[in-house]
Image: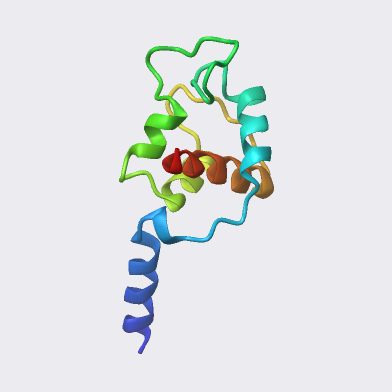
Length: 106
């Protein structure tokens, strides 16, 4: 029974974000991204500050099928590489993840 439960949890965690119900506020996530992430990323159309060439635009992340809700959450909780440690709250992570994944529908 335990093995079945573990397998079920792993399969659910690996599911793509398309069918998941997001708990964050995409509008709040957009506002936070414009304020915090736009220094490096293109986070919105016609943003005032140009993004760095070496980092992906949020729209590019949203279109990548490998970018799931789970992966975004893990990345935002444990930044690495050149990304600064933002120390986002769970609510802020929910909001930013919801915003990024909302770009799939555009």
